[in-house]
Structure formats: structure tokens, C-alpha cells
Image (cartoon, rainbow, N blue to C red; front, side, top):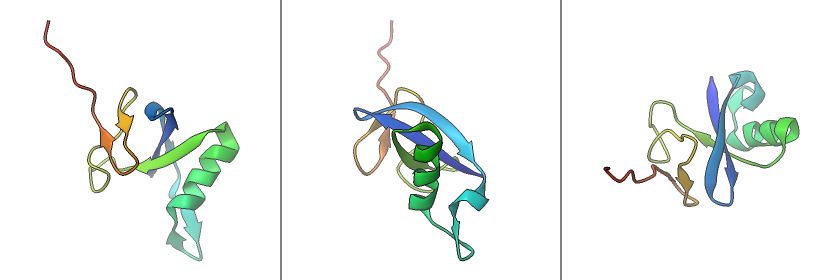
Length: 79
């Protein structure tokens, strides 16, 4: 399964799971095809994220920042 994060003004607002079949072009996974699938389904900008942290820094979560290359976790200040 592939995971995609919706980006709004540089922030992750949603993360969804997409079946790998939606990414395939001639049997090879293609990120843009997955992003287009998400866009056609729900609108907006979508970027693939790695559940296993294999690329883009960390697995995206709601509230994370997208810097154009990597996802960045929010800084949580202690109480």
C-alpha cells in the first residue's frame, strides 16, 4: 500500500492509503500517477510519504510541514 499526504499551504492536512495498483504504469510504480489519482478523487495537492521512513525524512502526519523535499514534524513545546 502507498501513502499520500494532502498539502495545503505547506501543511499536511490529510494522509490516506492508496492501493499500489493505482500507481502502476506498465507494471512499475509511478508516484505522479498516485498523486493524480488522489487529486482526481479528492482534489488538492498530494505527495507520497513513506510509512517506513524510506524517503522524504519522516512519515507525514496531519500538522507536519512539507518543505518541497521532506516532511518536517511540528515542534512541540513542553508545558
